[in-house]
Length: 73
Image (cartoon, rainbow, N blue to C red; front, side, top):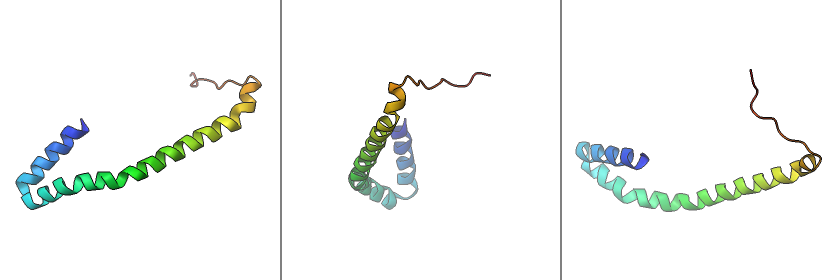
């Protein structure tokens, strides 16, 4: 769905101002390539924090603690 919205926005931009539309067409893959390392860093930090959470909560889980589900009204 996001790709369709992006494509429709690009088509509107191309009709209203074609030089900016062509510039967007050229720069979008470059911006995607630049953002890839940032996504990998974010994924790595997310995994590290999940590991730390698991390690910190391990003693409680070994002692039988189970988190409660959503509060019931």
